[in-house]
Length: 235
Length: 235
DNA sequence: ATACTTAGTTGTACAGTCAAACTAACTTAG
DNA sequence: CTAAGTTAGTTTGACTGTACAACTAAGTAT
Image 1 (cartoon, rainbow over the protein chains, first blue to last red):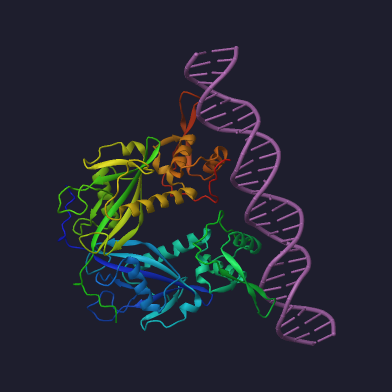
Image 2 (image 1 turned 135 degrees about the horizontal axis):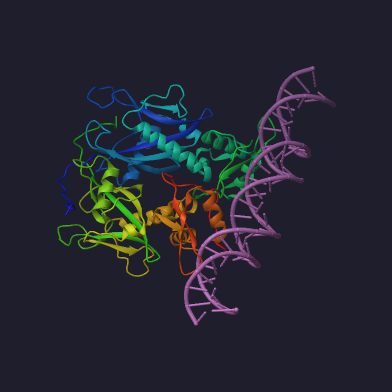
């Protein structure tokens, strides 16, 4: 009865947005783009998540659309792209009923330093200062992405996707600590990370100012690993 | 440059589908609806997940739309409704580029026994026999929902939403076992479930054929609880 | 009464973490 | 050349929570 699939029913605006994270300057940062300043646009000049309308002629599916948006702003294809969820309502876009499919991506630092689009810029997530108000409901989406990232980091190997190809264990631990925003216990972290069978040592060592450290890399084709316990801080 | 928000761009078809789970006859079951048999419809007569087009005049947001679909088929409002994800591509619906926002709901057994819509029917998920082929990409969506449910059950209190208001600990354990499809260790289950501060005893006891058992209920306004370890089977 | 069933508890072995102290390898200052 | 500083990584012992099995408890059926 209520199931009248009328093809001519008005359809919601459909967009895809991507929350792109990277570790830069020892902080978790997110990529934002500035909206065009034309007054005909909603939220002119405001900062927003990278994204835009689905191109039903060019995009095979939602993920392809997300990859396209990501590539357009960063020039790279993320090693990690996950669907975050969707937000749709009558009021989130002044132009009418709209729904966005949100993704979140993790970039290693070196990839995040590449050629950005002109209207794109990195902002610290823990934006006490400076992180601007966001257009649409993008603040809510960003908050959901940070929550999801933090939650998953508690029991998965996600931060490994924020690392360069080769890294040391202390560097990996520092990445975990930045994402979680709290210190972790050294020896427990080591034991569990090695037991997780997620990374493997490479022949080389990293020479630094101090004692050299073993280099590791992600085992190839490894899905995120689940730990059986959460990480706890020392003290 | 690539950001031309043309309002007149063709828009994808937009639907909401709901995967509704319940425990019935000691098995995890899912509610399916039969599509109309008119040849003008896609997948005529096939079984599909309950759902349909977003009504941009009547639905405030996606979740309200999901609640509406759920209520239409079961007559109730689920105590647990969570967004599962979205699926969108050029090919999933023969009528054109379409995207669906999928939700999943958990119903307690007594609510699942109520007045179903005429075209709706329960099917066992572990459908060795009988569970029909599904229309669209609904088999994929259902599989994702089962995976998500099983994963979350490993470390959250989700199955509590499949229970009636009052239940005993062994009954709750049986629900976990049905969802996970494996036996759990009794005393570890008890210890952790009680330590989770999720349920509270009520004054009454359940009289059965054997020793009476303490009745519990969900603490009100409790979000799903995360455990610090996964459940392990005995043996 | 005795056996059977299911609810719930107790006790021991064990695995993994916490936390601090330790060793190791390098650099820099004197 | 030596001593102090820094960071990498290991060892150690106390402790905690779980796994597992054996136990007690309270009812029913024969």
